Image 1 (cartoon, rainbow, N blue to C red):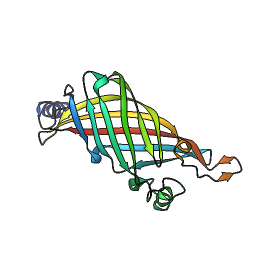
Image 2: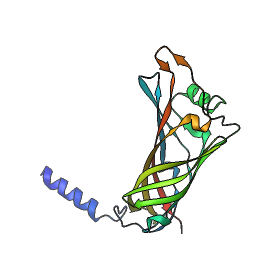
Image 3: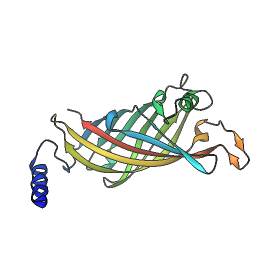
Length: 198
């Protein structure tokens, strides 16, 4: 009986067209959905552990093409949306010791070149944090498409990279007996969902 109910439930899910997943890519420009996009970071703390955080607000677009070289990404992230789950630490990160959000309220990434395939691509682009613009490379992939309940077409991508925070004039550090309190290398992971612009 249990297996029959499970089979029936699975059949209903498969036959439902409320949210059709796994569609072939519809080439075009996708507006980033901040509610379903995550830009997170990881950095060493006191040498032996790590601090995780994210930015809760992300704005911009990504354009996906079957000809990967024509794809683009243009993203703006408000620094004020930083979230490490500790309010006092978040305020410190917004201060002149780190991002200086009052003076530099956003960071941006603008792609210059896509190479590879949809399932495995590299994006070379300009990352601007504070008063520094530096070329970085994202390694990513297109993870799928879906029709949403409102008739929209959605696509998702993921990507990651590593940067040295000091390259962007984020130099603050304290020393402890075994080394720096905050690491220099920052691992960045991006999971983004966008809605096809009409």
